[in-house]
Amino acid sequence: MYEFRKSFCFFFLLDSVNYYHSRKGWRTKKKNRRIFQMNKKVLGMLACTAVAASMAVGVSAEGDLITIGYAQVGHESDWRTANTKNYEDVFSEENGYELSLIDCDNDNAKQLEAVRNFITQGMDYIVIAPIQSAGWDTVLQEAQDAGIPVIIADREIEADASMYDAWVGTAPYDEGVTAGNWLAEQLDGAEAKILQIEGSVGASAAIGRTDGFAEVMAEHSEWELLDSQSGDFTQDGGQAVMESFIKTYEGQFNVVVCQNDNEAYGAMDAMDAAGITYGVGGDVILISYDATHDGLQYTLDGKINLDVECNPIQAETVKGVIEQMEAGEDFEATTLITDEAFCAPGIESEFATTMTEEILAGRAY
Image (cartoon, rainbow, N blue to C red):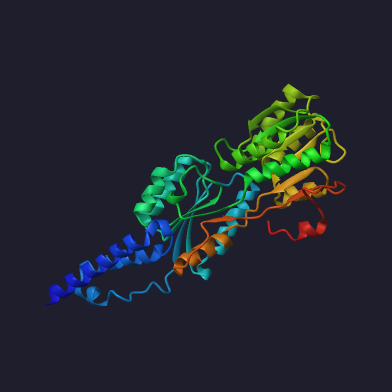
């Protein structure tokens, strides 16, 4: 009877889980993931002892820390540093979480390895800020097979939405369109000779900002893109690219577009060294993205004409999605973090807010 009861309980629960999988569509419904993980652990206990078999129903993970594996891009910019701190603050033990954050140092292979390690460790949830937009199908399938929910954060990936559970991030394409519309408004039909310092090659943020700006540029025959090179979202990269541009195009350009603030700082250093004026009243219009605290300080000072925001404070939104999953509730599969754009004092625009001391003082990053 003892052996019968143990076997009966084991196979009854196994059958119940399988039935739920087939009836509710475990992946397509995108909910109750951790409940299933608990069931898997319970099944293992049932197989080991009769005591576990008799008490399996009703086992609770209440009081346990929820484990989160976050595969972070790296530490290439002030934006990324703010994003990392945001995750560390939100997913703290005090809030009921155990966060394992891996700085992947802009190494795509290292990021894939980090995700696979999270799978092996049996994390409750995996969050990925993808370095590259392509090449994710295999590892996402591995996470799916392991029953671990995956949330894509910050950037986008080239994978079917069924391969992951939720996406939380910003809209770099729209950011590029905003920058283009603002420039068109300010130039009002005047010629533009543009140099662009792109972000990391293959990153969705760089692709989106490039494509969005290009859409507006295509509407203006009086604009010319002289050159566009990657600065890898770093200050050193931005400076190196700008120095190269100056050697080739000195005296020929009047607009510089940098795809994040750190690249803009590097470009400013290069233009300062070459005696090229920029910003309000300068020879060159300087456009940047991210709108970090230092970037907005330069905007307030008139050094950066326009800074288009990309909000790094995203962890609370990710946490909200996880809480809904934990409760077995339906949740938003796609959540867009809203952004703004800020222009230097003295510039009027329908596409950007004029920067003030009050705005800067209220910034969280």
